[in-house]
Image (cartoon, rainbow over the protein chains, first blue to last red):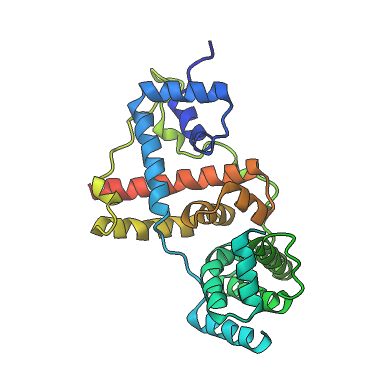
Length: 78
Length: 210
Protein backbone atom coordinates (compact mmCIF):
# COMPACT_ATOMS: atom_id res chain seq x y z
CA UNK A 1 0.00 0.00 0.00
CA UNK A 2 1.42 3.35 -1.01
CA UNK A 3 1.78 5.98 1.69
CA UNK A 4 -0.95 8.58 1.97
CA UNK A 5 -0.46 11.93 0.24
CA UNK A 6 0.06 14.95 2.49
CA UNK A 7 -2.06 18.07 1.92
CA UNK A 8 1.05 19.93 0.77
CA UNK A 9 1.55 17.32 -1.97
CA UNK A 10 -2.14 17.47 -2.88
CA UNK A 11 -2.03 21.17 -3.72
CA UNK A 12 0.88 20.56 -6.09
CA UNK A 13 -1.04 17.80 -7.90
CA UNK A 14 -4.26 19.76 -8.40
CA UNK A 15 -3.49 20.92 -11.94
CA UNK A 16 -2.34 17.49 -13.09
CA UNK A 17 -5.54 16.10 -11.57
CA UNK A 18 -7.80 18.59 -13.35
CA UNK A 19 -5.87 18.15 -16.61
CA UNK A 20 -6.33 14.39 -16.39
CA UNK A 21 -2.59 13.81 -16.49
CA UNK A 22 -2.10 11.88 -13.25
CA UNK A 23 -1.19 8.21 -13.50
CA UNK A 24 -3.97 5.96 -12.22
CA UNK A 25 -2.17 5.06 -8.99
CA UNK A 26 -1.57 8.68 -8.05
CA UNK A 27 -5.07 9.57 -9.12
CA UNK A 28 -6.45 6.93 -6.76
CA UNK A 29 -4.34 8.25 -3.88
CA UNK A 30 -5.42 11.80 -4.72
CA UNK A 31 -9.11 10.89 -4.67
CA UNK A 32 -8.72 8.86 -1.50
CA UNK A 33 -7.16 11.82 0.30
CA UNK A 34 -9.88 14.08 -1.04
CA UNK A 35 -12.63 11.88 0.42
CA UNK A 36 -11.13 12.21 3.89
CA UNK A 37 -9.95 15.82 3.87
CA UNK A 38 -12.39 18.74 3.89
CA UNK A 39 -9.57 21.29 3.71
CA UNK A 40 -8.24 19.88 0.44
CA UNK A 41 -11.79 19.53 -0.85
CA UNK A 42 -12.33 23.22 -0.21
CA UNK A 43 -8.99 24.06 -1.85
CA UNK A 44 -9.96 22.16 -5.00
CA UNK A 45 -13.35 23.91 -5.05
CA UNK A 46 -11.63 27.29 -4.77
CA UNK A 47 -9.30 26.42 -7.65
CA UNK A 48 -12.37 25.52 -9.74
CA UNK A 49 -14.08 28.74 -8.73
CA UNK A 50 -10.94 30.69 -9.66
CA UNK A 51 -11.00 29.12 -13.14
CA UNK A 52 -14.66 30.06 -13.58
CA UNK A 53 -13.95 33.62 -12.48
CA UNK A 54 -10.90 33.88 -14.75
CA UNK A 55 -13.23 33.12 -17.64
CA UNK A 56 -15.07 36.38 -16.89
CA UNK A 57 -12.01 38.66 -16.95
CA UNK A 58 -12.11 40.93 -20.01
CA UNK A 59 -9.11 40.78 -22.35
CA UNK A 60 -8.11 43.67 -24.55
CA UNK A 61 -8.36 43.50 -28.28
CA UNK A 62 -6.93 45.96 -30.83
CA UNK A 63 -8.01 49.58 -30.51
CA UNK A 64 -10.94 50.66 -32.73
CA UNK A 65 -8.50 52.86 -34.68
CA UNK A 66 -6.19 49.95 -35.41
CA UNK A 67 -9.17 47.81 -36.44
CA UNK A 68 -10.37 50.55 -38.78
CA UNK A 69 -6.90 50.82 -40.35
CA UNK A 70 -6.86 47.08 -40.98
CA UNK A 71 -10.32 47.12 -42.48
CA UNK A 72 -9.22 49.88 -44.86
CA UNK A 73 -6.17 47.81 -45.85
CA UNK A 74 -8.42 44.80 -46.46
CA UNK A 75 -10.70 46.91 -48.64
CA UNK A 76 -7.73 48.16 -50.68
CA UNK A 77 -6.26 44.74 -51.38
CA UNK A 78 -9.35 42.55 -51.75
CA UNK B 1 -9.50 22.53 -42.73
CA UNK B 2 -13.05 22.22 -41.36
CA UNK B 3 -16.17 23.20 -43.32
CA UNK B 4 -16.64 26.37 -41.27
CA UNK B 5 -13.11 27.38 -42.05
CA UNK B 6 -13.51 26.81 -45.80
CA UNK B 7 -16.51 29.12 -45.72
CA UNK B 8 -14.54 31.67 -43.73
CA UNK B 9 -11.66 31.53 -46.17
CA UNK B 10 -13.99 31.82 -49.17
CA UNK B 11 -15.66 34.86 -47.59
CA UNK B 12 -12.31 36.52 -46.94
CA UNK B 13 -11.11 35.86 -50.47
CA UNK B 14 -14.35 37.30 -51.81
CA UNK B 15 -13.61 40.48 -49.85
CA UNK B 16 -16.36 40.12 -47.21
CA UNK B 17 -15.58 43.02 -44.90
CA UNK B 18 -17.98 42.00 -42.13
CA UNK B 19 -16.29 38.61 -41.81
CA UNK B 20 -12.85 40.20 -41.79
CA UNK B 21 -13.90 42.77 -39.16
CA UNK B 22 -15.32 40.05 -36.92
CA UNK B 23 -12.17 37.92 -37.19
CA UNK B 24 -9.94 40.88 -36.39
CA UNK B 25 -12.01 41.74 -33.35
CA UNK B 26 -12.21 38.17 -32.00
CA UNK B 27 -8.86 36.68 -32.88
CA UNK B 28 -6.86 39.75 -31.91
CA UNK B 29 -7.52 39.01 -28.22
CA UNK B 30 -5.57 35.73 -28.11
CA UNK B 31 -3.14 37.14 -30.67
CA UNK B 32 -2.24 40.09 -28.44
CA UNK B 33 -1.75 37.77 -25.48
CA UNK B 34 0.41 35.47 -27.53
CA UNK B 35 2.49 38.33 -28.99
CA UNK B 36 3.03 39.74 -25.51
CA UNK B 37 4.91 36.53 -24.70
CA UNK B 38 7.64 37.40 -27.18
CA UNK B 39 8.02 41.20 -27.20
CA UNK B 40 8.70 43.74 -24.47
CA UNK B 41 5.76 46.13 -24.46
CA UNK B 42 2.02 46.13 -25.07
CA UNK B 43 2.48 48.72 -27.83
CA UNK B 44 4.96 46.45 -29.53
CA UNK B 45 2.55 43.51 -29.25
CA UNK B 46 -0.17 45.61 -30.91
CA UNK B 47 2.12 46.37 -33.82
CA UNK B 48 2.93 42.69 -34.18
CA UNK B 49 -0.78 41.86 -34.35
CA UNK B 50 -1.41 44.59 -36.92
CA UNK B 51 1.56 43.47 -39.04
CA UNK B 52 0.24 39.92 -38.85
CA UNK B 53 -3.17 40.93 -40.18
CA UNK B 54 -1.53 42.87 -43.00
CA UNK B 55 0.49 39.78 -43.91
CA UNK B 56 -2.72 37.72 -43.76
CA UNK B 57 -4.49 40.11 -46.13
CA UNK B 58 -1.60 39.88 -48.59
CA UNK B 59 -1.14 36.13 -48.24
CA UNK B 60 -4.78 35.00 -48.45
CA UNK B 61 -4.51 33.93 -52.07
CA UNK B 62 -1.32 31.98 -51.47
CA UNK B 63 -2.65 30.15 -48.41
CA UNK B 64 -3.11 26.53 -49.48
CA UNK B 65 -5.32 25.36 -46.65
CA UNK B 66 -3.04 22.55 -45.52
CA UNK B 67 -3.33 23.75 -41.92
CA UNK B 68 -6.36 25.45 -40.39
CA UNK B 69 -6.78 29.13 -41.09
CA UNK B 70 -6.27 29.89 -37.42
CA UNK B 71 -3.07 27.87 -37.22
CA UNK B 72 -1.75 29.67 -40.28
CA UNK B 73 -2.56 33.10 -38.82
CA UNK B 74 -1.01 32.20 -35.45
CA UNK B 75 2.12 30.90 -37.14
CA UNK B 76 2.58 34.22 -38.94
CA UNK B 77 2.00 35.96 -35.62
CA UNK B 78 4.54 33.92 -33.69
CA UNK B 79 7.18 34.33 -36.41
CA UNK B 80 6.58 38.08 -36.55
CA UNK B 81 6.67 38.35 -32.76
CA UNK B 82 9.83 36.29 -32.43
CA UNK B 83 11.68 38.34 -35.04
CA UNK B 84 10.67 41.47 -33.24
CA UNK B 85 11.59 40.02 -29.84
CA UNK B 86 15.09 39.27 -31.09
CA UNK B 87 15.44 42.87 -32.30
CA UNK B 88 14.29 44.08 -28.90
CA UNK B 89 16.82 41.69 -27.35
CA UNK B 90 14.13 40.00 -25.47
CA UNK B 91 13.61 36.29 -25.59
CA UNK B 92 11.69 34.37 -23.00
CA UNK B 93 13.02 30.85 -22.52
CA UNK B 94 9.80 29.10 -23.51
CA UNK B 95 11.37 25.70 -23.90
CA UNK B 96 13.20 25.56 -20.57
CA UNK B 97 11.50 25.58 -17.23
CA UNK B 98 14.00 26.79 -14.69
CA UNK B 99 14.73 28.61 -11.43
CA UNK B 100 11.58 30.44 -10.48
CA UNK B 101 9.40 27.60 -11.73
CA UNK B 102 10.85 24.96 -9.42
CA UNK B 103 9.82 24.24 -5.82
CA UNK B 104 6.44 24.50 -4.12
CA UNK B 105 3.93 26.82 -5.79
CA UNK B 106 2.06 27.54 -2.55
CA UNK B 107 3.58 29.15 0.57
CA UNK B 108 5.09 26.30 2.68
CA UNK B 109 4.21 28.25 5.84
CA UNK B 110 0.57 27.22 5.28
CA UNK B 111 1.53 23.64 6.14
CA UNK B 112 2.84 21.96 9.27
CA UNK B 113 6.55 21.21 9.20
CA UNK B 114 8.71 18.34 10.39
CA UNK B 115 8.49 19.35 14.05
CA UNK B 116 4.66 19.42 14.07
CA UNK B 117 2.15 16.66 14.73
CA UNK B 118 1.18 16.15 11.05
CA UNK B 119 3.96 17.31 8.75
CA UNK B 120 2.58 18.44 5.38
CA UNK B 121 -1.01 18.89 6.64
CA UNK B 122 -2.72 22.30 6.50
CA UNK B 123 -2.06 24.42 9.60
CA UNK B 124 -5.56 25.77 9.09
CA UNK B 125 -8.04 24.84 6.38
CA UNK B 126 -8.44 27.47 3.62
CA UNK B 127 -11.06 29.99 4.78
CA UNK B 128 -14.41 29.74 2.97
CA UNK B 129 -15.19 32.34 0.30
CA UNK B 130 -18.42 34.34 0.32
CA UNK B 131 -20.96 32.76 -2.07
CA UNK B 132 -21.61 36.13 -3.60
CA UNK B 133 -18.15 36.14 -5.23
CA UNK B 134 -19.40 33.66 -7.80
CA UNK B 135 -22.68 35.45 -8.49
CA UNK B 136 -22.47 37.06 -11.92
CA UNK B 137 -23.48 40.72 -11.75
CA UNK B 138 -22.97 41.11 -8.01
CA UNK B 139 -20.82 43.97 -6.70
CA UNK B 140 -18.34 41.50 -5.28
CA UNK B 141 -18.03 39.64 -8.60
CA UNK B 142 -17.04 42.94 -10.23
CA UNK B 143 -14.42 43.56 -7.56
CA UNK B 144 -13.15 40.02 -7.92
CA UNK B 145 -12.71 40.51 -11.65
CA UNK B 146 -10.64 43.63 -11.04
CA UNK B 147 -8.60 41.81 -8.44
CA UNK B 148 -7.96 38.93 -10.85
CA UNK B 149 -6.84 41.42 -13.51
CA UNK B 150 -4.23 42.71 -11.03
CA UNK B 151 -3.15 39.20 -10.11
CA UNK B 152 -2.72 38.41 -13.82
CA UNK B 153 -0.67 41.55 -14.42
CA UNK B 154 1.62 40.67 -11.51
CA UNK B 155 2.37 37.14 -12.74
CA UNK B 156 5.69 36.31 -14.39
CA UNK B 157 5.32 36.77 -18.15
CA UNK B 158 5.19 33.15 -19.30
CA UNK B 159 2.73 32.19 -16.58
CA UNK B 160 0.49 35.10 -17.50
CA UNK B 161 0.49 34.18 -21.17
CA UNK B 162 -0.37 30.53 -20.47
CA UNK B 163 -3.06 31.33 -17.89
CA UNK B 164 -4.66 33.95 -20.13
CA UNK B 165 -4.74 31.68 -23.15
CA UNK B 166 -6.03 28.69 -21.18
CA UNK B 167 -8.37 29.99 -18.50
CA UNK B 168 -9.33 33.50 -19.57
CA UNK B 169 -9.71 32.88 -23.31
CA UNK B 170 -10.56 29.19 -23.04
CA UNK B 171 -8.06 27.60 -25.45
CA UNK B 172 -7.33 23.90 -25.01
CA UNK B 173 -4.00 22.66 -23.74
CA UNK B 174 -3.19 21.22 -27.18
CA UNK B 175 -3.89 24.58 -28.83
CA UNK B 176 -1.73 26.47 -26.36
CA UNK B 177 1.18 24.05 -26.76
CA UNK B 178 0.97 24.46 -30.53
CA UNK B 179 0.77 28.25 -30.34
CA UNK B 180 3.75 28.58 -28.04
CA UNK B 181 5.64 25.57 -29.38
CA UNK B 182 6.11 24.14 -25.89
CA UNK B 183 5.66 20.65 -24.46
CA UNK B 184 2.55 19.59 -22.53
CA UNK B 185 4.72 19.12 -19.44
CA UNK B 186 6.16 22.64 -19.59
CA UNK B 187 2.77 24.12 -20.23
CA UNK B 188 1.39 22.31 -17.19
CA UNK B 189 4.16 23.60 -14.92
CA UNK B 190 3.47 27.20 -15.96
CA UNK B 191 -0.30 26.71 -15.76
CA UNK B 192 -0.06 25.15 -12.32
CA UNK B 193 2.02 27.95 -10.84
CA UNK B 194 -0.22 30.57 -12.40
CA UNK B 195 -3.45 28.94 -11.20
CA UNK B 196 -2.05 28.51 -7.70
CA UNK B 197 -1.05 32.19 -7.63
CA UNK B 198 -4.42 33.31 -8.99
CA UNK B 199 -6.32 31.39 -6.33
CA UNK B 200 -3.98 32.65 -3.59
CA UNK B 201 -4.42 36.24 -4.75
CA UNK B 202 -8.16 35.83 -4.74
CA UNK B 203 -8.07 34.13 -1.33
CA UNK B 204 -6.15 36.95 0.33
CA UNK B 205 -8.55 39.47 -1.23
CA UNK B 206 -11.73 37.61 -0.24
CA UNK B 207 -10.50 36.82 3.26
CA UNK B 208 -9.72 40.50 3.74
CA UNK B 209 -13.35 41.19 2.76
CA UNK B 210 -15.09 39.01 5.31
